Image (cartoon, rainbow, N blue to C red; front, side, top):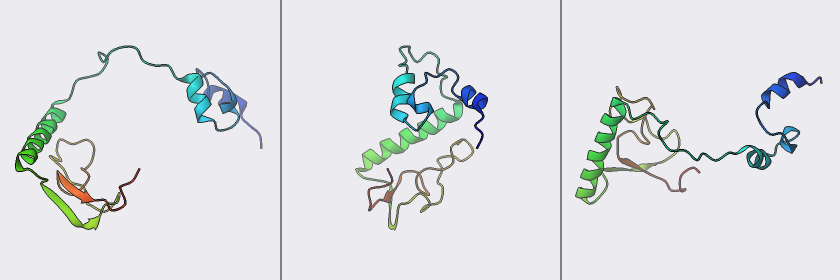
Amino acid sequence: MIKDTQTTHNAWEGFKTGRWTRHVDVREFIQLNFTGYQGDDSFLAGPTEATTKLWDQVMVLSKEERERGGIWDMDTKVPSTILSHDAGYLDESLEQIVGVQTDKPFKRSMQPFGGIR
C-alpha cells in the first residue's frame, strides 16, 4: 500500500504533531492542540426571530406546567428509543432542527433503561 504523504501532511497542517499522527491517540492530540478561549461572547450572533418565537412558546409551556403542578403528558405505553416516537413540533414552520423528543411538545417518554448515553 502506498501512502500519500502529501495529503497526510496537509491534513495535519496547523496542528502540533506527535504520536497521534502515527496511531489513534485522542488524549495526546487534545493535550497538544487545545487552546482555551479567553474572550467573551461578543462574536456570537443573537437569536433569530424564529428562535425567539419558539423560545417564548417553551417559556409559556414551562410556566403552565409548573403552575399545573405536574407534567403535560406522558407516554406510559412505549419505551423511549431514538426511533420510538414520531417527530413533534412547537411550530414546524419555524423549526430548523426537526422534531422534539416525542410526538408532542412537553410529552415525557418512559425511559426504563435510563435513556441513551
